[in-house]
Amino acid sequence: MLKKKNQFFYIMLVLCAGYTVSQFLRTSIGVLSPNLMIGFNINPNDMGLLGGVFFLSFAVIQIPAGILIDRYGPRMVMTITIFFAVIGSILFALSNSFNDLLIGRILMGLGCSICLMGSLVLITRWADRNSFSKLAGIILAIGGLGGLLATTPLSFLSELYGWKLSFWIASAITFIVMILYYTVLKDTREGMSLNLDKKAISLKNTLVIFKEKNFKYMIPMSLMSYSSLVVILGLWGAPYLKDSHGLNNIERGQILMLMAISWNIGSFFFGRLSSVFGNYKRVVIFGSSGVIILLIILSFISNTESIYLYILFCSLGFFGAFSVALISHYQVLFDKEYMGRALSTANFFNFGGVFLIQWFSGKIIHLMGGNSSGAPIEAYRIAFLFVAILLFISLIIYLLSNENKKRF
Image (tube, rainbow, N blue to C red; front, side, top):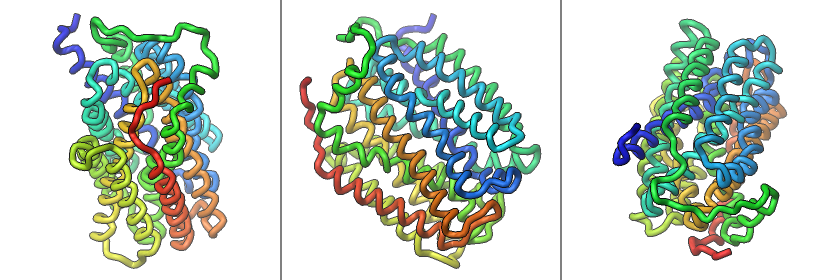
């Protein structure tokens, strides 16, 4: 039996481990995308679908999972759900066709869908509201090591032993995390009671979230905040560096690894910047503005030295971590008994946005002349500029929101 004073520490360790697995699986095809496109004869349109379908299945489960978490608690829902990631990783490792890869990604997305959202709900039940942003930043930063492992280490492993071995290893680690979820997590701290709604599960359980006016103004930013980072780190960064700058597999992995490290560092910083800026909204404005500027720069540069690519991708990784402040903005708008539904609904838009952006960007690159062997630099320029414009529109709408909670 864990000592009570250490219990939350062990819970945080397990939550970080689960999010590490989630980050690895979601970004793992980033450095592998050129190899997968050639090996399975996948064009950019289908590659965008393969990259995005993880996030589609991730998004679809969010709202029902939020209702289940509020009613039955994070521990059991997280334990059952992550088992699908184990199956998806095994299927991906066994894949012999594009359809096999697609089904594996769908199952991985489903299995990882609760790792972050369930963790955030547990934080709200174990820590005070003022600590939420800091603790969420810790989970995002430490869990972001999974994204780091999916860069240079995955490149080396795939070069030496083939990419399939990494997914056999991932399936074993994910199974261990599932066991830890069941044995270590606890839904609430001792003495805490929630005003839970024991009525039958229905759409009304979620529609109440939309009564919060500020939530609606934040939806476009949710669609674009995380997707504006992952479209580079998790999908098109490696093909862009290969086709537009002639970098090899290891060099591409190194740049994306440093981008992932910068994202980890940014998560720590953006989790604490509200004390500097005064509220979460200003932090989101600061971070999203940086991403917009960097995407525009990325859209127009050509024939640049490698050092500037390192700087640009690292800066994009750092500013892309502003999504932790957006999550924190959501949690101040709702009481604890609504938190599962609120954060899961927000996550529905977060990861639904990733699917849409990766899919549409793949279509753009395909229409601009891309194929399984590569794409012209103009194709990537249009795709990245498309993302920057959508993020700018989302920022304009987000400016209408505030952090005043509405009582239901």
